[in-house]
Length: 187
Picture (cartoon, rainbow, N blue to C red):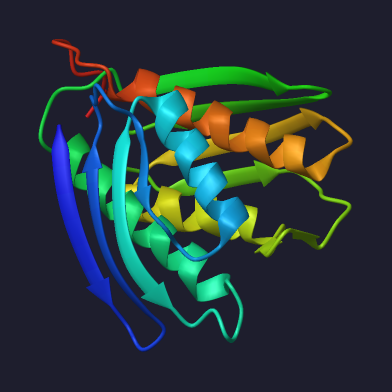
């Protein structure tokens, strides 16, 4: 399935194309923040998604608007795809990254909420502000209209912790997006 979203604010200009069942998963383009691009690429590969990103942002200020607005646009693209077909709705995944382990559970039933339990020792990983991990997933969950629970079980290295979070979220979302003939809702 495919969605294309554009968004322009005073801080960012974004054009994003999302394909959820890609034969060539990964990220094309760049946010301008190296580690965030690495996380988006990791997210895309582990979710089986192709994300094409064209953007500019106020990186001379910091990465906040760039990371948050990518979450908004990506969440909106996922929401358009969710509304276009019958899906499994629920997904969950544990993913290790060396000494770190993250767990993510997802419900794509239209009720936006984020539970995020993770702490980081460092303020930055390269040019990526570690506190923006939560902000990205908050923007993703609310614009996707998804209930996302992320729990970092343990870990020492902030790079590994962050990567296990992105990977577990991608795998849980991939499971929840799988086609299903039986819509799971008590509406």
